[in-house]
Image (cartoon, rainbow, N blue to C red; front, side):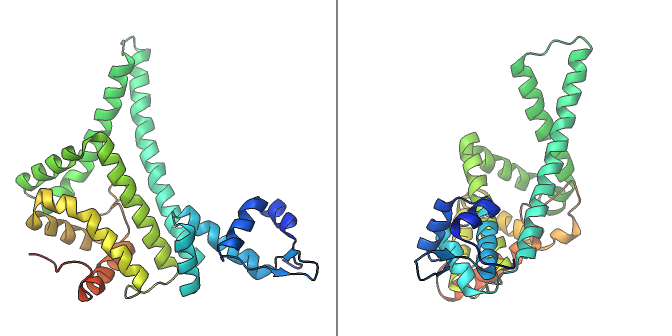
Length: 264
């Protein structure tokens, strides 16, 4: 950018509303200089800062968290973009699988078979479940006994459909925040990282209570070795970098007594 922009010009060129730009300034995220007449002037550094804010927002961070992250460490947008690409690629694979099931059902209808809407929905649901179980079975068999796997099924069922969806959303939000922390080069020893570790522990706690410490520790080993079993079809819900960061931050949090010692 070879010239400074007014707030109106920046809003027009970036697609961000004037109201949003004023909010970011009020929150201390952007600090444009003012002319003698009191008009805001945005320079190249301000626009780069705006890009960082928007990337972190897309990763699920609140404005308060964004302020802490940007003020603490140099920002690495490439790593955050890579994380977004990986997440979208996984979504793309999931959509491709769903489309395959829908097309198969459509062929059945074309051949004269009558399927009600309920039956079609059941078919999609069962198809997704069976496909997921089929591709994951070799991995689960590697780390869990049949009894262990039954404990996981019962633990999952105990949440109920709505509870399970909400639980998954909480994990997705936390993983996005850790990705953002990694992108900003936040140290696992940092207070912000340890707060993330406490949330990780709190999210784990209901499942640990349901499946038991022994089974849960097998899950820890599985994720420590994710590089040995991940394929384009079988993907962990978070990257090895996220898991490693969470483990290191948890160790630091334990040392401060923020979370209990590991069991087993």
